[in-house]
Image (cartoon, rainbow, N blue to C red):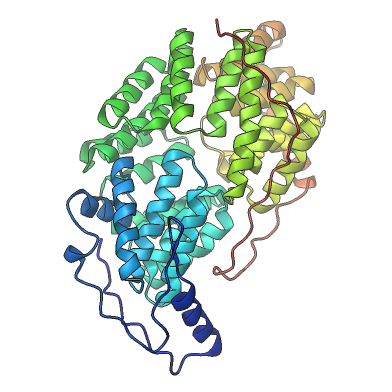
Length: 530
């Protein structure tokens, strides 16, 4: 990536009062991570220029990690730790190096994502805002890293604001386009996602761009294109850590198309390539459970949770326990879900979607509906449409539920992804409304897409399909009947609360992440697993 040379900091003279206060605040209050407070030189006294990069925080693996972080490609966790230590030390004596603050902030974001520790995110935000205070102009690196931070926190509106500011400032620097793809996807703006991908591919033809293309192709339901793009990314990856991420993504694609054997091979390859690719451990758990190797699946999930304790992994392990009749062990995991959500909230993470999905299946459906309605207003993505539709069904509001379930699978509005779970949800909602023909069709579609999509729901789908029996002798409904039913569902969705228009807020203003509801549930004890 071509990086622009940092311009000298302007003197205090001539600055506006707001800019002067920001400069003085940066000079007198710049923090040092690790608990050490560092006082910067007083205003008006220029420190010596920072040394050339080779003499600063750049040597061997650290230099490679810095280049990878700046380019937005995966980095091994040990290399990230070395990069952070190196830059923290360097910035104690060179506090006016805006680019190093930006690199440090981006490294914190990557650490937070790689370890599922949201405590890194406030550190990242402070480092990145310090970078902007030191160099408010020509600092696209800090803006792009703030977009990455907002994406990691699940605040796609803010990610969009920072990403668009970064692209406006440096339209030929490609990493910000990758962050904008994630932001637009999270906001349900799939046309903007496609246009941004086109711009990204026009600027960059490397493996990271191919991996982003695979992500977009998957969302459109273009499975073969997604598989080809991720295979290209894997073959061209520059480091083992980068290659492991793409192997893991290949495993996710194989899993979604119902091939657990192939998925398991990809996940195992990812872990051999980089043992710190913890998401591949959770992928192993899914594949092993589908193959009937339950004990191995439990061990894989436990290993993933020990190293990257994401709430989603705890939900999956809990549902695996429930499928084996281990309700007590499942409740332990569900308690951990709530604990993890609270810890994430302290780091500014928006977990409304996770909370809604979890409460719909394992808690209070009314809480799920409330949380997901709020999320839909702010970030109306296909994922939220599916989750809200299912929560409404669980709360007994099936007619409105069908409208959202239809949106989640509407190819005209971005619902092209072939998801067994989405099809299952829609089939169950249709069954509740006595729309038996479409219910059969969507339940069968779920099992065709991936017969192992959930150790908890897949058996239910098979049982429901058996209960529905064969279609009546008069045959399936006509195309006109299907279109009429879908039109009625779409009208129900339109009648529901529409999402709010995106606010044109100043990207420098931080939007606080929503705090999920607390719980006073006592800690259950986990019984011996069979």
